[in-house]
Image 1 (cartoon, rainbow, N blue to C red):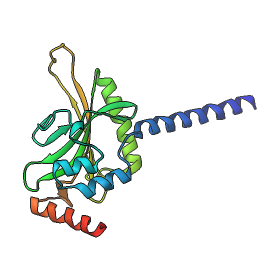
Image 2 (image 1 turned 180 degrees about the horizontal axis):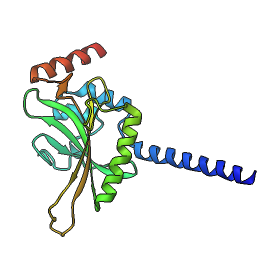
Image 3 (image 1 turned 45 degrees about the vertical axis):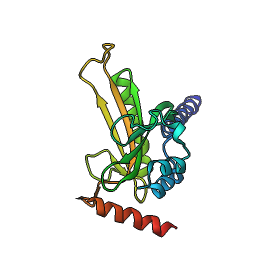
Image 4 (image 1 turned 135 degrees about the horizontal axis):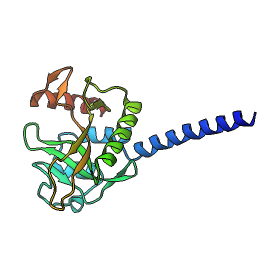
Length: 201
């Protein structure tokens, strides 16, 4: 009898531990409200998007210039996701249509094992929250009416300046470029975004 009780207790501890790991991994991912707020700001200019997302120009790490690539603005404050601090990057397009199209969260890791563990934990949580990827074999999920979440893993085969390998994980929440297997033109994306935004008013 004692053995049965101990076995049941051990099983419960494993279940609770697994739940705790999932909650830790999910902690910090954008909430439904945050996604909807971002969707209401899609295609707005940088200043309007910053204010709507709860930031200001002072929160931009690179000031008025893009920090990572054209239209990508790094924010001073990071965001904790799964117990790790990710850099926040506001994504804006300089092509048609111009304006906000999403947010990215990026973290670097010292080892491949650490990066892969973090990726796998996030992938499990994303699947639990949103189901299977929108297209088989991809790391892309529909998470809002206008938003797609993609998970990117990068491992460098080259040594960095300090002779260490470089591993990066990025969560990107953004407007989809492909809908129902068809790549959207700028005009089609604009029409889709504006239609949803008008309906929500």
